[in-house]
Amino acid sequence: MTVLIPFEAEAQLDWIALTDALAAGHQTPKGSVEDVFLYRDENTLLNRSAWIKGMGLAVKCATVFPGNPAKGKPMIAGAVNLFSDDHGALEAILDFKLVTKWKTAGDSLLAARKLARPDSKDILIVGAGTVGRSLWQAYGAAFPAAQFTIWNRSAEGAARFAADCPGVQVADDLETAIKGADIVTSATMSTEPVIRGEWLQPGQHIDLIGAYRPDMREVDDKALQRARIFVDSFDTTLDHIGELKIPLASGAIGREQVLADYYDLDKFTRQPDDVTLFKNGGGAHLDLMTSRYILESYTP
Image (tube, rainbow, N blue to C red; front, side, top):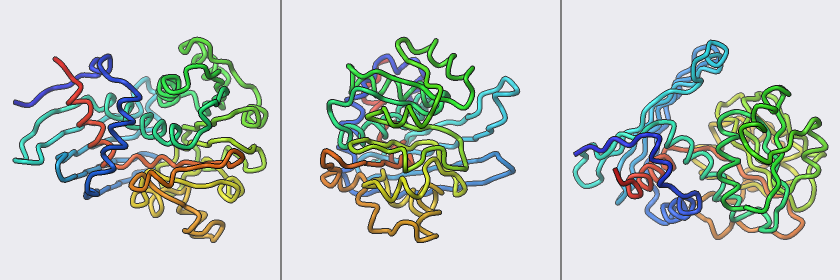
């Protein structure tokens, strides 16, 4: 029987348990992953598929229309199908927003649990959209004593975010906010860097989520040159996302400077004064791992 899992199932989920499941998932045989992108103007059709031995298959189809919010419509729509590894039957249809929310923020949180200083007290969220709100929830689970600050291009958007997320302070100046943060987590739709390497401070952890297209970046070359760089997957980031694809092509950084992905979690280490930088690419294998965690956690 196919299980239909609604968004409300998130009440049964736990951020720390999810990151543990993602870590365990990367101890299984490396899966097959295929991404197909279709573009029209600023709009994107993304089809992501993954097959991991012992875990099954997942297919996620998403449309990203950045202009939709101005029309009163959601920017992202889609569906996730989870299939059995044993016989290929459809086991579950999961709410797209549920899987995407928990996969995206959980992906970043796993890296932060490995790379950020455990005593991090100041967390800056760059970008006041839906993902920023998910990051506030996820990071709050792992760093419960932290003070959160939001910066957004639109002051009105930042104010709405702060109103929705109790205790969050609004930053007026991005440079000042970055210099004062222990963790910077960024989820913007920018094609030009918004975070400058000259602003980074020893001991910080930088988490980059927003860029997903070959023409998108959130940090400049100097930030990458100053940091120890990690990714969730070499396969879905290096040749696909502008954050690394562009500086690798220009020679601003070398391939050897991207130190590890989640299939080598033991290399996710830091010294106290290191600047660590993680690029969240969010491949289909992570959608599969997250969907499997959700199904196993769900009680109708």
